[in-house]
Image (cartoon, rainbow, N blue to C red; front, top):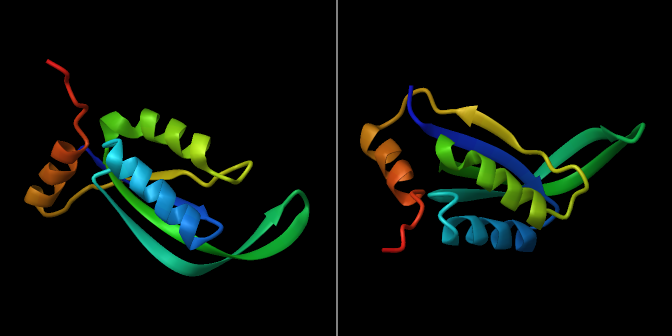
Length: 110
């Protein structure tokens, strides 16, 4: 079992997805974020079935950074109830998983 997580969230458009992805990587809360444009969502919200086009973010991070990442997503997300789902990465190329951990280490000011 690795220390890496794959976080999923959806945003209403490419511009907000790109802005959030950049913010997460710049703050070292994510090593990498892939943006999947134009996914279609069908969901029930407040008793009504809705349909929307969204952009999905695939966020790679270390488990130790999850709490901060969740706070950052909630603060920047335009939805009242953002989808934030964390999936453990149980296996993968060891060098890639090590890279995720290295790129999400907190900066230590000496």
